[in-house]
View 1 (cartoon, helix red, strand yellow):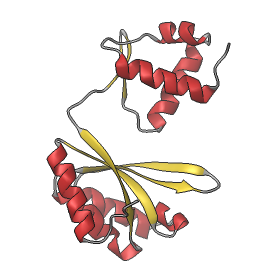
View 2 (tube, rainbow, N blue to C red; view 1 turned 120 degrees about the horizontal axis):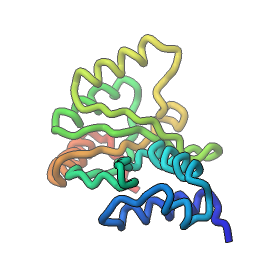
View 3 (spheres, helix red, strand yellow; view 1 turned 135 degrees about the vertical axis):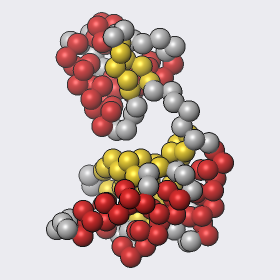
Length: 171
């Protein structure tokens, strides 16, 4: 029985997360009874969801780097964007993405890759020089960030800082 695309994506992710060796596209295609090209497209879709998949000569594997990740739900106004982002990168963390949960469109995610004050400055320059507005404005300033760091302690510091600045939303 053919699986839905969403089920297949979830299973590919699980296979790669639990495998200690790279898994070939051909092997995944056989497993799911689809073409290898479908698997290549699926890997692209998973990467678009910020799932860190590496391509090697022997197949696909997850990038199990030493970085830790945590998702934070935050709320703030436009005039607090710079302070929020600078505070995160000053602690040595990286802002991997921003996303919102839209009631109609679902999850909308944008890669950020902000790891320094210079990156923050460039991001804000792009906002100011554009007709676009920050993604958070669609959901009345509520949004999420995936934050990565070299250790859990840094992520704990980010959480504490966001709480102290009243930016963190507790659910």
